[in-house]
Length: 167
Image (cartoon, rainbow, N blue to C red; front, side):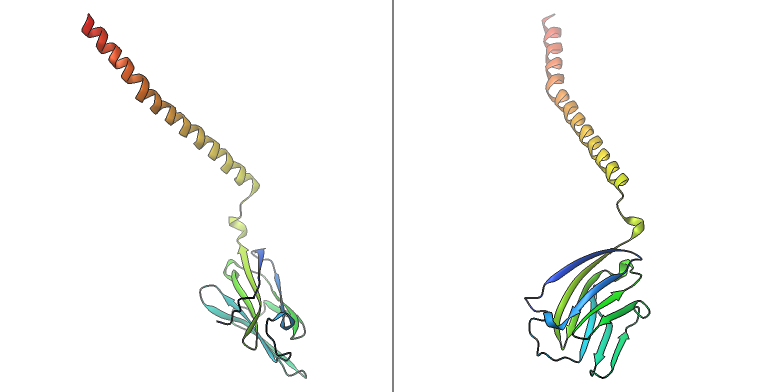
């Protein structure tokens, strides 16, 4: 693991089908040697996967998107300070993203991609509130009935028993 205890996390929320832009900056590293030649962007959820590899010798550069990201990943800027855009997000893109320069983690993002079909709508939230109110009323009613049964019925039964014995 390349994590430094000083690394800050940034949480990003997007919807399925949208794009996300992550900033990868060597200048924000906790420890840097002021010169780097490569950068990896990793995605960790259940296992660590490379999103892309970016290499430059300052005369030419090479960007290699990995399987599952080819055609969906773009880069802007220099190696030391760039942004990586992942297009057409899916729920499977959710997870931890790390920009790693020379085995030093410089930027960490937690990406949460929500599925449009399963998002909470305001109407559904209102229905949930109504259901909670109905549940509370039913619970109070059941408690009141139990109270009635436990306190009132024994008194009535004993009164009936007392009247029948006295007669």
